[in-house]
Length: 539
Image (cartoon, rainbow, N blue to C red; front, side):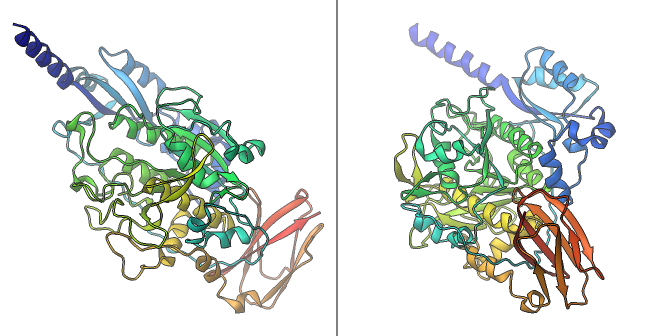
């Protein structure tokens, strides 16, 4: 009798589990779209608006929040729990029985319902991105040096230390890190430098819906990945972008595994966009092995357009940010290939190598299901140096660490050439890599060379010899001795990356800086396909 009761309880439990489903509920419209776009500060920060304007990113309906009245009605529906929302896709992520979720179709504002359970809904929503070609730039200066300690090899392997030597260490760049937990970041010495400088801007725990992103969540994975970008212990460890500003977002629930975390990730990416973030690092990946196997993806789904998080990654690209993501650690498993969002065209996907530049066997391979090269590039992921939550400098294995090492380097490169687009920066990084002409499924395009990128952007010596810029330091007016007949566009940026002046010179030979405050500025000179960048001091 005991066995029969046990079996009956098991069957009842299984029925209950089978009846509980997750789904995305898409809405038909939004409210106040025209007025919100006409008044973008009502929906975005000034930092976000500035970044979009600089890169000609349109502020559109996707930036307008989801109608809260619609969300309230869904929340009030019988048996429905709302777990996440997305303004980019105008939807909410819900949990309930299939019957209760299906009943939401009767609401007049519901456009469609997509179930996480592949057997209930197998449709795809395709999102494509524009391919843009990089243009030439240049910059010369040598200033900053660090004692990298244990992190030296992983930085020097990319020649990212060369960017630091040119005084590009992430200043003015804003990076968001999506992960599972950041204990110790608010207390240990390894992050004291960014705390003291006020560069640890904010954070949020999307899983628990609270502001304590530093509480122990069962994982310190985020602390370690974050250290590879931002950590600093003089003489022992330096991250790849030690002077950037940071937001930390928890989107990964260490206790569960399912598409809900994808929905939370997209919500966090939307917040990053609204805050003016330039670069996002995500050392997360989704494929199979979900708590509910019915939600598992197949390898054919890794086409960059199927997984919700991959659609979100493509939206990150469309909104002008640059997403760096880990390829995944499935190289030795039956799955084998990259995981979402690393499959997305909008993601700069990073695989793992060792100290010698050799493929780390655990690193997920390419290509994507639609036969694109992935991973894009590789960085140190076997024996990568990290700072742990107890402030110990140690090593860890995984593409989780090759991704942030790369993200910091990319941010420093973008700092040097602020008017370049995300597409241009991504393509420059790919083209610099060691296997660009002969990519492999293990290493993609290979190991990038940030020194060669920087130096290749100064190949037009005729351009740099065609003018002189003076005086520097400058008080009120900056002069140009022009011998070129080309029109010269002058753009001036603060060290925070905000463009404060833009003029086109044809017959004029100077511009006024009297309205600018004292301090350091980047001056970018553009003539045809060539660019030159220098720093000036305004007094």
